[in-house]
Length: 209
Length: 209
Image (cartoon, rainbow over all chains, first blue to last red; front, top):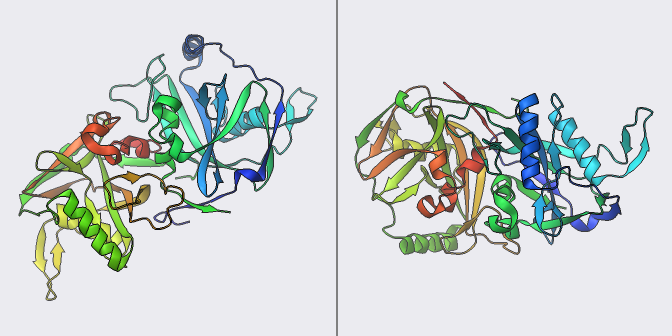
């Protein structure tokens, strides 16, 4: 990997992975207004929210596909969530990925879940950032001029899977592998953050296994 | 700079730079159809065209701006051009930047121009790629499925300037520093490649001098 060359990324076929269902994982907030209200309450206590999300890439018939979670047969989102104050970005993203996509094997004496394949997530670099400037739904891919107190910073990381794995999907969600050509220029279906993923991935040279 | 942290990029203010005019630099092709015809002729002889372009970033009042060339008061393009077969990407981009934005100081015995400040371009990594699949104007930020013989590969590189410099602009072109907020979601004015620049830059943390 040279700083000036294009980083090569090994992708495995979707057919290498198994999918199984696990218990529901209800959304923390039941509506967008409720989510924005929580954001505002937490901002007043803890300051800017930090969110981390994963762009997990596989391939189908040699075309890259991104794993998306679908809620209620409509809204799409990337795996990940917001962090607790002071929580490490990478460890925090790994914990969210396990909560959303791994099986609990046991629970520690302290009540923490132990996940099967907890370290299977190969978290690469941050490939994009978004900024929320107000307690509203719109996020920008840059910090707008004169904004000194953003309300949320969202970072998206490239995440690769091991050659084989079972992904455990909460029963109230769907996991879909969506091809880049379907995401591209399709903000009406996927929103402006997901539809930007083809740009964020364009600099990588994918090596298909 | 850590692989997992967000790379910090030092930006200087636009007011640090001087602008001067130099002789016309006519476009090689007088129209889009003529350009596509040349692409096709060259493809038949040399194979896929390789193009390199520079995203040169400065700031105005602490908001990042990208340097764009404007032709005939309408069409915008990034500095850069296509490479000769076998030409090195980085050396080739540096030569194009000098031809477009530097002053010729002297000419070698072999007829090659010697440019003032020829090494002033701090060419960082490739931050995006585009693929042309046919002899048509549309480019994709990924290699579409089943395309085994793309006609053009365009790479865009992040390029930083020294703290001070004079940029020499061909008389038939304008050089404009355009803010990210004006480029963003404005493909009708800037085209789909330039309007994607805010996404490609989003992962960097800009440190404004």
